[in-house]
Figure (cartoon, one colour):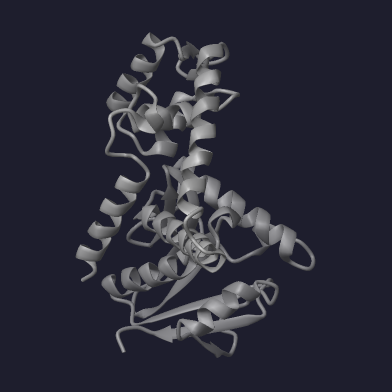
Length: 292
């Protein structure tokens, strides 16, 4: 369903932006090289960060960089502090080439808008913004992750930091009910981590209790990707995981200041219930039957 429409959209966009031409923007280089030049930027970029941002195979990115180096546009150097890290920088010629590409990109954008009426331009720009958000949402990956992994630890630290900033009296991890790494590792529980361009942007966890309800813990979404529906996606996947491991009910507690989370839980079918634990930071307790 929708496959034909997506393919037609992709064909139209690739033709309109000139991706089919060997010489992108009438410069003697393909779109891939032009995109790498733009992404390196005036200040340079670590190669591994570049690879993550562009979702490129390391071998293909290396070939693109070698081509740009041979044209005198880029230099790739080892980082003095860490020899394992390589940084790509634009040469003076590369900066000039990037400037030309920027100007021609502006001209291409203007050529798309110029034939349209004011209302059509507004509609197109609004639609482009929505398409961009949905495409970014489609690139987020969610997977069960060892809570000791660096990505998981980043998410958990960010979660605790946000609670500390938003709760009335701050947040002390030691006072809260436990959700240790062991408790979030199968078979005791699990942790989901969401990544975008290989960078962690969200998490959510479960604690299992045999025939008792599963506990939902550690729900966090980075401010950088809020509005993409990631919180609901994580919640839905946690419910599927809970059901797959035999739980018939999911429970959670939350703080009154987390208004967005409370709205999400209510809209997802969670019902407020009497307190079922003594979490000191909780003001609301929710429950949802699964498989109904």
